[in-house]
Length: 261
Image (tube, rainbow, N blue to C red):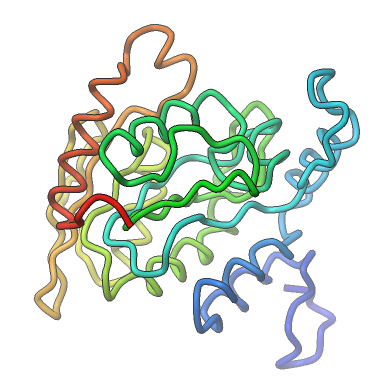
């Protein structure tokens, strides 16, 4: 937070304390999503997302890039959440919706559509008609990072948004799928702070890894690990389409959601 600010003054969007101040004050996901898009708390990420939008790729030279933090996507009563890494520079940073406009999203949404949790198998832009059923997609870092690698400081600055999102989803949330080691490692501290003790030693990430996390109120939350549907993983066969469909099917079954709207 700006040290010159008067006591009790809300931090500016460019202050490091902006997420921590505003996230806990949001009364619903719509308000949270709106606050997320205003955030400028990480200078390196702000510079990068705006530089990418200014230079663009030749294939997208006619696009008006989103070039802001990208909020989560999906209904407020989702029983299943999927946590990725961060927006892609020419994917979500361009389209304004997570996993939209890049190959990783093509892989993920096709799998969600196959098991009845998405209205269509493709995601190209915010107005393409895509709806998610009982699942919300989010990320630990909401701005596109250089080389797709957020710093620990950037992850920690952004953490209050993820914590607030899960707090708002908590009445219905039953299962979380973490895509990749970064998502797994960013997720566990958030859940611990929310009153779900993490086993020690901390469980290692792996495709198919599964945790059952109880809470004092008697509720249980399942956390599943999946390789990220990055082109590196899908091109090499580390993550195949049947592998992702199988894991998401298990997650949906555990969440108890009926496919379709």
